[in-house]
Image (tube, rainbow, N blue to C red; front, side, top):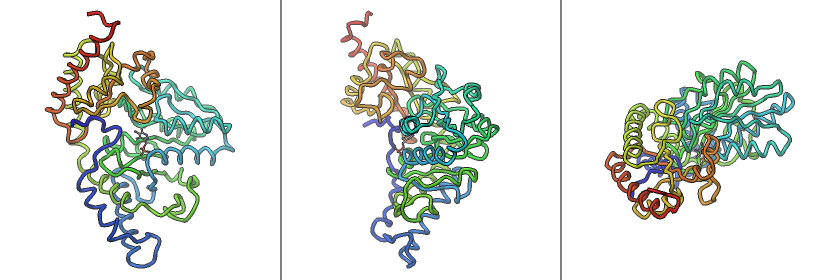
Length: 386
Ligand SMILES: *Cc1c(COP(=O)(O)O)cnc(C)c1O
């Protein structure tokens, strides 16, 4: 199988699994306990927190482990809004956020907050000027993703964060796609709250983190219960998961530069071959520096992405038509609509996301199979005139 859906999830590294294994049976103590077995777990969580903090060039005390990117997004947005509601009820986000942000914002809108969903340009970029124009006296929170999961566009986060801070507004970023894939420094990028997830960086599913800057450190916990995570996130810690996340962070930090270089070269090679060798195709999103190293998203005129995915699967290729969370439903991607596609065009696009073990041979084979698949689908399409 050729797996090109790494934006949906990644294969856990063997080294990650190896570090996790002892914490299932051997060191199963509750990290809150006083005896040695509990201390083992507590210490392992401390190590993981240090490793996650190192990847963000920050202090361990600012890292809080959660059940994943979705929980981190919910926590940051809901609890920041609640903390600041006396000051105002206006929130700003983009129209291309992950459902974990979009639907949280919609829930807050139902609860009496006012939300501005900013448009993006044809490359998926949020304009700093649009953010500036949207800011009001009662704006309390801006949440813009670091990089988009469907088209890979990297947003001007540092500038948006600076603008937020000029106006005394809290700034959250969903960095789930960017974390460990490109360098991120919350201090330098003016980030107050940052969401990340382990399973997008070769770690286990069901574990993530929320980074909180000193300014955001007063937000309340989302999950009520015991005093875990310094009273910020109740529930007995997922020790093996956190250990695996820590290891994945450590591996990511030591390999980020070489992965960026290698994946962006393969990305551009694959894009070039597809665009040159398959007619009526176009690249969705930005090119070069404004694009995640491992993301390819291409529109194929006169094909239906969902049909193409089934045929590709039969040939052993796992790809996606965009967000895994909306796949299965026939709704066109809200991201592709936001960059100006009509509903038909939005159903013609395929996403291929690379991993650090993707090879040029795999991509060559994918191009060959894509050619056949696209030909076959187009020849069955009555609207396609040769
Ligand atoms: C995958 C993803 C999430 C959700 O993370 P989970 O850990 O799966 O809950 C949130 N935002 C973005 C951009 C993602 O790609």
